[in-house]
Amino acid sequence: MEFKDYYEILGVKPNASETEIKAAYRKLARKYHPDKNKEAGAEDRFKAVNEANEVLKDAEKRRSYDQLRAGGYRQGEQFRPPPGWHGQAHGGHGFGDAGDGDFSDFFESLFGRGAAAGGQRGQPRPRRGGDVQASVQIDLQTAFDGGRTRLTLQDPSSGERVLEVKIPAGIQPGQVIRLSGQGQAGAAGGPRGDLLLEIGVRDDARFRLDGRNVVHVLPIAPWEAALGATVAVPTLAGKVDLRIPAGSQSGRKLRLKGRGMPGAHPGDQLVELSIRTPAAESDEQRAAYEALRGQFKDYDPRQ
Image (cartoon, rainbow, N blue to C red; front, side, top):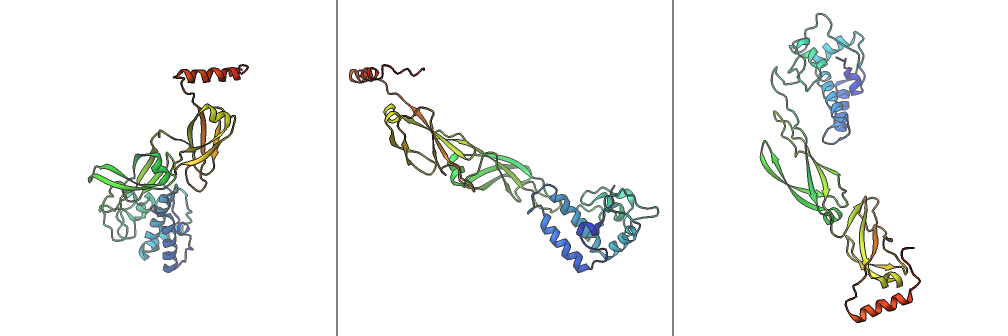
């Protein structure tokens, strides 16, 4: 097991006053609290800060710890209690009593289980509940606009729960929303864990997502492609007019700037042209096609 330098963990000098220790603890506890800091390692730092404060705020524990630290031990060095050490503070139970989990083996080897302020040997400490992972499918319009959606969870401890989840505008498939306090119940009065909700976006008949861009396939008539035209195009924010350049071909993509998914850097809407040829259902229509063939007799679309 490793030696813990509680002064180094709190960032204070060994002769720090109670006021300095309290101020350092509050600052670090706010910084690394799991409800506010979701970075990797923050929860371990939070536990280490709590443990350091548990020792240094208590005059008796601190005095015993200082006697031990005077032996020249350093943070992270391999450590075993010296011969004759019997958990001198608050009736600890020696090296063999380690392993409760909320505090390190180092702490419990010095002070025994249940040595936290107000604790008793064998009394369970409050523990935060575990996080729960779930997923929800929303339609593309909701992902674009934002809004609220209902989610039903099966909770082993409290049965079925219905939550109303706020969806931010422009959310992307695969993004995770963290709902604090909606995870598993804590033990011995500890706080609930969090719910990690992964967002999925259902397929849409009109649009498909390409990152933050939105792609729409626009059917156009042959004469619109050949001569050019202005047509109404659907977007997730409503219809807009789009100019089709003369001589356009199927597969050509036109860009509507900023009409994609909203965000700090909004996406665009890409309009892919698809030429649709009407069927010749009357003699007049067949004659029109014959005349068109005659006008373009040298045109071969396969070359």
